Amino acid sequence: MFENRQDAGNQLGEALEEYQAMQPLMLGIPRGGIEVGYYAALHLECDFDAIIVRKLGYPQQPEAAFGALAEDGSLYLDPWSNRYLNKEIINRVKEREKNEIQRRIRMYRAGGSLASLENRIVILIDDGIASGATVFAAIAMCQKQNPQKLIVAAPVSGYSKLSKLSAQTDEVIILEKYRDFFAVSQGYRNFGNLTDEEVLHFMKLWRNKSAGEASQG
Image 1 (cartoon, helix red, strand yellow):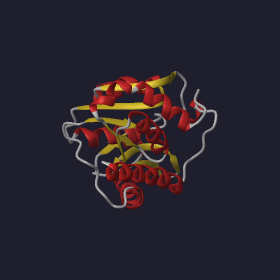
Image 2: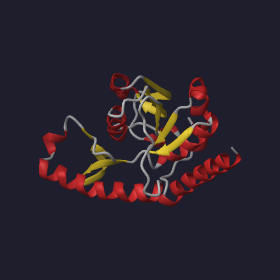
Image 3: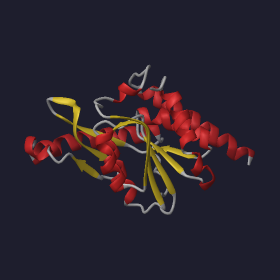
């Protein structure tokens, strides 16, 4: 069990040290993946940015995901979603989340685009993998850009997602795995939902760090 996201990020950075010399690009999935990714990227001294993905929630139970949408339009739908939702409802939820994706791009990345992933070692990172919807949408987006290697890394996950993750990526690194896993918070002693302001804080810290290094270089 991890003390908090900082502890998880530090430990994940240690687990990824073999990639440090390869100058990977680490992409955090907001919100929780930004804090974990920030500390892991500090440890590796690698490039870091936010990849914007939004969970698609059932209208009557928004916290329960039936899929996810990535910023480039890559879509993941749970295999069971069509049993409970028609296309009209799915499209309505997608349109709402498209607006939220654009808002987050403006806020977290100052409206900028992601760097090219082509021929790069890309590490997708989140604070944990429960339903897996956002990670699978992010994987689909990244694979379209032909990375040299795509790695999914998270502090915690359930065993049930590992085979599917492995089939869609080059490597999966999970520090703690649970057989009965229902919520990411199970893996943390101190766990709370991050706010936009907290995510922006980490992104600004990273941009300031990068700007300082560039001026010294």
